[in-house]
Length: 467
Image 1 (tube, rainbow, N blue to C red):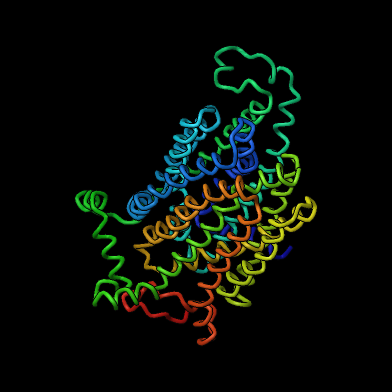
Image 2 (cartoon, helix red, strand yellow):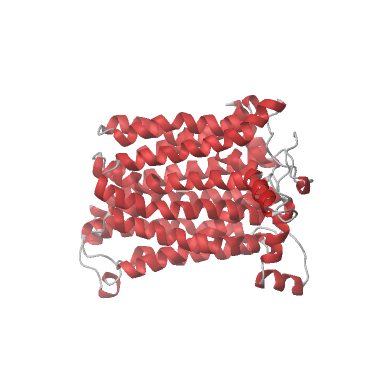
């Protein structure tokens, strides 16, 4: 209870932009929860298999991957307020297409557009919170942002799981409709009930725009029109400057390659790659796994996934405290490693009750230190390059997920679920091993919690400093 009270008091001490951003996360979290539970099941009700669902995920993530570096440049140069507003509007418009269109090509096109908007949301998250907070506030702010999103996600998942059944009991919603409405809605009760639930989710997300319009403008840097135009047209000088900051352009090719392979940024990118590879394999298919393979109803899966996210939110609040006690590297590594046996057991079991219980705690343990990893990754680069660095992290994560999402769908269709979970567990183990090998050993040597982070004020030296 004391921990919750402390977070409530801390919320009042956050900067205004940070508080409004958190409110937006709360208001949009319900919609996200409904979509996570129902959208794949909606595609299944239309007659599509896991392989097509994988293609939709691939195209959406491909759109995000292509937009991720332009998004990073925009984040470093433009107002966060404008980026948040326009990207949310773009996602909303694309989301309408994903719900109302039922043919493969429109579904893929709207997924691609939604991915572009999602790229901007993804990239701006960490830099925006970093800019609008002090170093002492950041662990609590990042963790609170994740926790609030997860709590509202739980609410959305619980509501979303029950909505299709509720709509299906309404005879006038499932009956004949006017031609101008029936053109957009499916004729069968199953797909139509999912459509109506997803459309309601879109309506719920509308008020989430209000806090964004109340944000104060926070353009990161005031640069001349000519300089800004040159940056947008040619990002290579910016990339060159970033590479110079980690010492990549100073000596011969062998030395540069060695410095690159041992730089904190490169290894953190590699960590995000393996996390993305794992997530793409199994995360998008959990709802299908529980509903079709283990026999859960959509409502029951909504409760299971909601409970998992609730536990994740609670553990996320504990993560900063745990990091202070055992160190950030230990927190990031061991919480994820402990979750791996649970993931493997879920993939191998045919017992719904066992899978549900393990699922509750697997997600919480695996994701509780994500906020710590975000802070850790941001502080590895200088302030002026955080947008581009976060683009690198998120691009690597999203592209990796885009590559494995269709592979996961094909593996499920042809090989079943166990190989998907085993391969995903291997990727998570590699990500944890890289973190421990590069940063954990340095922490043991220097007896400090935050070793392995290159000083943002002396990045030219590319040496690890004790914080």
